[in-house]
Image 1 (cartoon, rainbow, N blue to C red):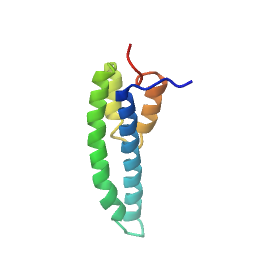
Image 2: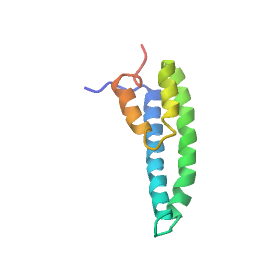
Image 3: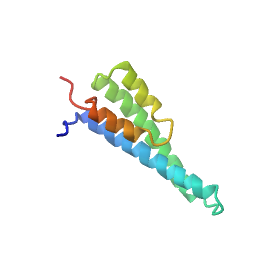
Image 4: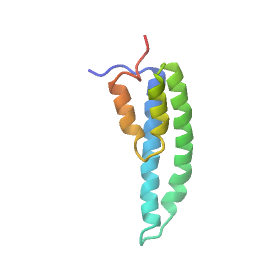
Length: 105
């Protein structure tokens, strides 16, 4: 049985997915750009999208950490997770599993 998510937890889950999705799109776009294909359309599309998603994720992470009263290590880990590619999605799944995205009682 899954636990219900707090509104800030739901917003964090959306932000983590968007950040991961745009990272994947940017990586695929970079693969096309720097391969024999040489097409940079994916980077032109996903570069700005990822930049916006990254900033959105950072703001939502700070808000979620405050609203959901995360321990310092969780807030720091969530911020650091935005830097390497595709880490925000498994982090969100783990935070959901250990109850950091649910209502604080």
